[in-house]
Length: 280
Image (cartoon, rainbow, N blue to C red; front, top):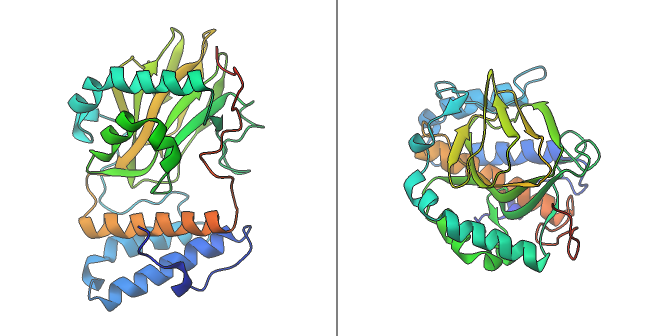
């Protein structure tokens, strides 16, 4: 991804102009793709982004013809057998990170999403990947987990250890990326933890994967007295063409790089909770 140069795109310098930056990156990539003769293969992308950016249009990025499911069979989107066979290694690295008390921070999507204020500091994350950018220092702390993720041929925008504190309820919400499928692998799951997607509620299981479309309404609950831990990541929607996937990956990474350069968020490898026994 680092071969893409932001300097070729006319972008705002203020971090609060993120919508302008995101649209400018899309326009640049679209013009570049058309210049390379890909116009006939871009019709679904153009339609999806047109609705996404249209005033009063879709609040999610979704391309026509992509299969919409509430729950997915995880075996249809990810190498479940390999991941689940690595459960013990992944959990061991989570426990090492917790023992070192480094790297975790409050999950924060900004004022329009979940943040420490509206989630009561009950959702915390150890980031391994974000906006299609690997968080290298954290990956170095978890080499076996990172190797499992890198082995996935369709790993998409994000991957992190997700911690839901005891008594935390994340109320009903929807995501904005209909071009990915979200996967949760249970690592430490006390009784009383549940995930509702659409009209169906399921429980995580340690060492097992669940997959769902996060543009469907969903909510998570930890009614236990202990912290629940998952490995959470997303994969590209299986119906995307290689061109569509590459285009969206470039768009996501370039926007994330602009945000990083404009200090829109703190570095993801600097844990707010370092040195603190915050989990139970």
